[in-house]
Length: 311
Image (cartoon, rainbow, N blue to C red; front, side):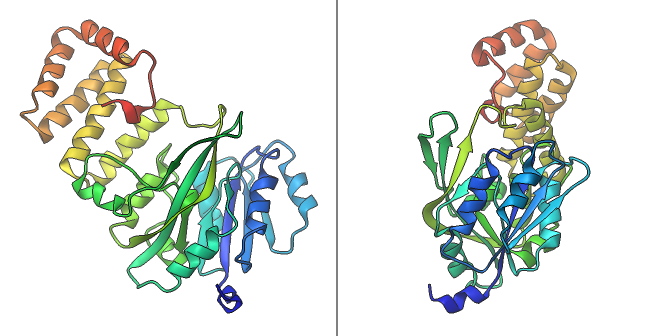
């Protein structure tokens, strides 16, 4: 890319909470980008560690630091950062993740020359184990992933850290829903794809750190998020996807012995596909032999897994 293209500014928004030990590496990965016209917006979500001290020691001219008075979650912090952005394009980097040097350059070269209906571009990611530093796997979400919402059976969306947005498009669809307890990127994608399309860079340009203390295993948050997605987007989602979500929610509540809630979502699944024999049997077992059903599910799942696996 020629330097003349660097005239288009990009805002990199980094929400953080108590990651003083990791955030410098994330910031350095932004500073090391081959694309240079970047402003970095750090949104500190009321950290109680020495994050502020670490940031101020960096003394980068292109870095803005905001510390919120109350912890309200990453979605709120991202939206706050987007409001502070002065650029035409915005992207989000989690404070424990890093980018390869050409991440922004390769994405902006595509997005800058795209049609008006294109609102974002994303790339692949490399999952890294926190303890060993070894690569776990590489993920490149299919470039027609958004069609799954209205025609498919499952969610598969690019993670926020891999996406470069046109800020106007991001704002137009309403930013992140701060009420969502999880799946914020999926819920955003559902709204986004009803107004805009995505393009893809077929390279793995983001490193995602997976560690034991990440807030990813709270199954109740994931189930509550699925409920909100089902409620907000039922008319847009495919019947099979709505059915699968209803079943996943029901299965979770069977495992947690909340059988009335489980019954509600099994009924919802049956209302979508009335002739699914396995679901009818599940409903009958729930009504007639609830303890047996829970025992069967406990053996099947052993521990309550991340609910994406509760089919």
